[in-house]
Length: 440
Image (cartoon, rainbow, N blue to C red; front, side):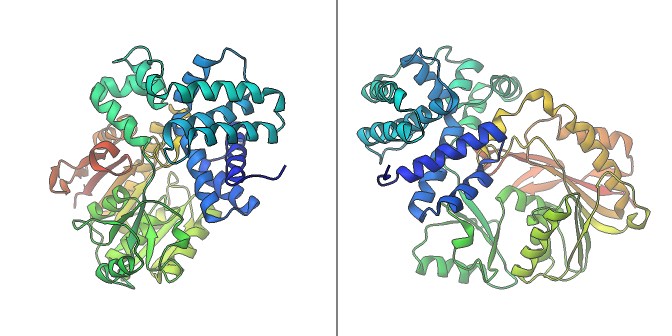
C-alpha cells in the first residue's frame, strides 16, 4: 500500500503505542526510535509524537467513547487504531473529521485488520456525528469521573481529592494533559540571556522568558537538538522547577558540590553555571552508562569542573565523609510530577511504589554524612506524594538532630524549608525540594 500524506506518521504512532503496551518502552525513547527507523520528516515526526503522547494522555476517555458506540470485543492493536482516530476527532481541530475517519480506516487495513475496517469506520463516524453531544461521563464530582475524563488512575484521583480537594485535583489532571512545553536554560558561561533572546527574535522563534530566573526560557515544544545554539552549547534542557531547586541550594564559586543522583546532568550543569565554572562538582550515579550523558553535556557546554563517578548513594564511603559544602540529592522516586512529559507514568501500579520511601530515607540518611558542618543538603524528587517528600524529610530530621530546615523563597513566596511545585499552580513539572543545613 502506498501511504497517503501523514499516514506514515499514524502508522509510526501505532507502532509506538504497541511497543509501549507490549514492552513497557518509555514513550519518549520509543518515539525517537520509531522516527529514526521510518526516517520521518519533521512534520510527520511532530505528528507521530503528538498522536502517541495524546493517546497515552487520553486513553481512558477515548475508551469510554469507543465502548459507548461499540460492544465488540477489541484486540489491543485494533483498540489503539480506534484510540488514534478518536484522539484526532476530539483533540486535533486542524484535522478534518473525514480525514481522521478515512485515515484510521486505511491504518486499520495497513496493519492487517481489513476485516475490522467497517467497525472502525462506523464507530468513528458515530463519534464524529455526535461531537457536540457526546454521552456524559457518569459520576460528575467524583474520583471516577476525573479518572475517565482526564485518563488518570482512580486511586490517584482519590488521593488528591483527599489531600488537596476536588477542584485542585481536576486542575492538576487538566494541566498534565496540556501539550508539552520545552524548557531550556541559557548557558551564561558562553552567552548572555539578552543575546540569546535576540537570536530567538531574529529567528522568529516564539518563547517565554522568566525574568525572575535568569536564563530560563520556555518554548512551545520541539526537538532541542535542532534548536538554535545547541551544538555551540548555548543552552541545556531543564524544567524550571528543577532549576529552581538548584537556585534554592545557592551554589557559589569555589564550592565543593556532590550531585549524588546526577543523570542526565541538569542540576550539575545549573550548579556549575551558578558557580561560574569555579570550584568542583562530583556527579555520581549508580548507572555508569548514563554518566556518559553528563560528560558529553559538560563538554558541549564548556564546563570543566564536573567529574563523574559511578556510585550508590546508599553506600557509606569514608573518603567522602564531610567532604562537600553542598550535596544535591535528587533521589529516585515514583515520578508522578512529570506525567505531563511522560504520560505513561500515570499507569503505574500503586503497590509497586510502596518501597520507595524506605530507599529515599536510606539515601538521605547516608548522604547527610557527606555534608560539611555548616554545609547544605538539598533533597528533591519529581513527584507529588507526601510519603516520598515531606514525610521522608521529617523522619530524617527526627533521626538527625544536627540538621535543620532552612527557609527559602520561591517566586517571592516564603517557604519554611520545603516546597512542592505543581503544574497547575507553578506552571512547572510537579517537583519537591527541601533545604537542610548541617549545624556546626
